[in-house]
Image (cartoon, rainbow, N blue to C red; front, top):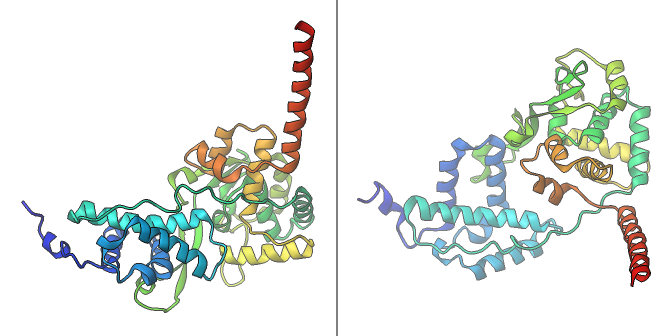
Length: 336
């Protein structure tokens, strides 16, 4: 027996733009507002201008390859990462899979052209830059922005999590930081696909995934500062000018200003998370514990995204190898 309304979507001339709207409408109730907004933005900016008027039966492996090459060359941001291109392409595949499963639409399911490519290695700021930044933050910890960034520096929390952090999330008796919220700015959903209107608003929601809801032990070196500068429980760690909280882009702006004062080559706030994870591995912290502190669902994510051996670590490894090889070679000669 045919599903009611199925004939409506069995037409051979179904355009990708129509299929994308069906997919968005069906999945929106299950997504967070930020997720829905992100998918709409990628569709509007990259996918619909290219595939909007294309029949979904015409999207082949070759067409996907052409699309991936096109957005890399013609994008306003000429430095699209392989992972980002893969995410964009994955949306196309999810729309096609939805049409096939939901409406038994006979479509090809091409491969993700960027899915198997290795992303470029992330280059961390040098240790000297991190040390100079940390010193500045400690010296100016009476400023809530510096204290907040210092917390992120030594815990690896995301910028949206820092933005939502309040003093009642800091439990000094238990020596724990409770991560329960996330602040971010999104575009108004109703304006994303149908107009160029750029209305945005701030939302506070639960963290990125269920694994992101977590408790983080407070590093001992932060406890005296947190005790000294603690404010009322309802206060945000970093306050805004017009609002009780400072949104992520405000924190990012203040962070860049601090880097400039320290005469440090600019880098993104998220590099603090990369740096924290890399230092933890270098100090011998087990990956499972680190994965839980960062709020990842698996240690594979932690290792692939946030652990970047430094040049000195690589040199130390080769020196250890050379030392071991020399001693082993002598042993072989002695007993040969």
